[in-house]
Length: 154
Image 1 (tube, rainbow, N blue to C red):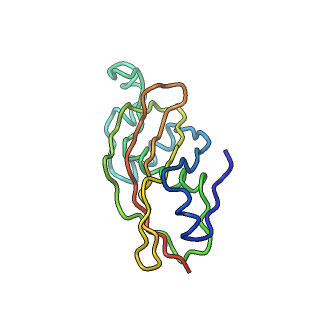
Image 2: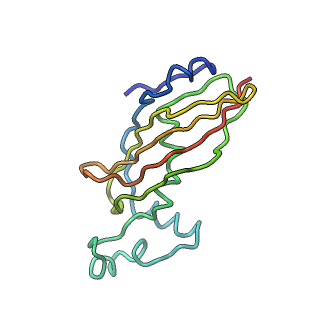
Image 3: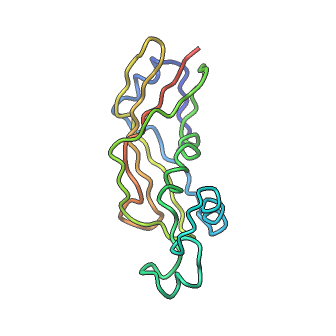
């Protein structure tokens, strides 16, 4: 799917209730999981001990931290939308976030997003984006929720 390009608040308005886009799949490998574990000091064996996870985990291998999956939202978001003529964009909050299924290390995920609502705050666009992060080949979603971003237009 082509990247959605937004140049103004008025162009954002046209997206309300619409699917904005869908990213390409991204592979989550063990190296990325290990780096996230180091960055967050979350070295739980289910994420980083490959040999133990093969034997003891109900997933028969290591799984991705839920918050690592969530942390990829900004990267995947930038793959589907380009907002021009802004000073900055700020993550404002997350709502209704639900982890539906663990992502196994070695699986690929992607983002699908819809413009749920838009509010004009004196030149700032407050967007509520419904999102789903799915796992390639799986029916259950890895993560879904609503992300709120503030876009400060020039």
